[in-house]
Amino acid sequence: TRLYGCVTGVSGFSELDALVALRLYQKSIRPFEDMVVMNTWGDRGQDAKVCEAFCLAELERGARLGISCLQIDDGWQKGKSPNSVSGGTFNDIWRDGQYWMPDPGKYPHGLGPVVDKGNDLGVDIGLWFNPSIQNDYSDWERDAEVLVGLNKEYGIRIFKIDGVQLPTREAEENLRNMLAKVRSETGGGVVFNLDAT
Image (cartoon, rainbow, N blue to C red; front, side, top):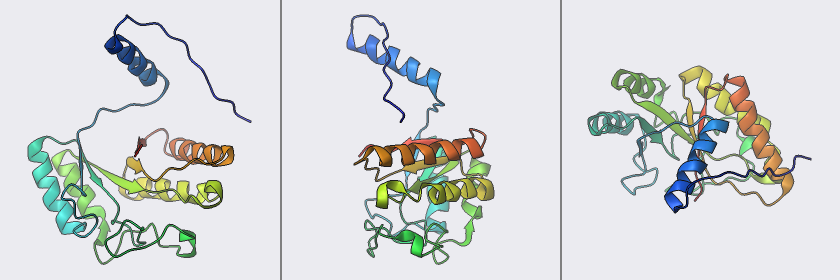
């Protein structure tokens, strides 16, 4: 069983000194990327407007503002989450093998046109993803395969991981395994934005 780690460090006396030392340490042990992120839920309409045309327009606006990543939040996928304006669920999502495919009604050409436009404008596309929490993330391998597949098919390298709950040690280990598998199978090319809400 993997145990929790502990690190001791030194810094100056101020809170800022301690925070800078902590950030330097964190940057030394794992990939870190500064980003200026624009999220598709910024209009407070949840996933109501999230679609290809909306994302293309947001990319144009965001590029003018100097963003480095357009994070397409919940609503890009065919499956509907409980946060969708149309309602949905996270329970047994793997009964629908297409839950994590781009919604063909919203993205009739897949995510390719949005990713291509982002590349043209120098803006990365990030995607929201909520790992399958049931049974302590027992479907972690399937979840990892989805992220690796999106990376390979579209070149998506930034994923917002949302809805994380760690009620047991097994859940923690399975989530850690999912993240490690994705990083390994993409040669370290994926960055995770862990949403701590």
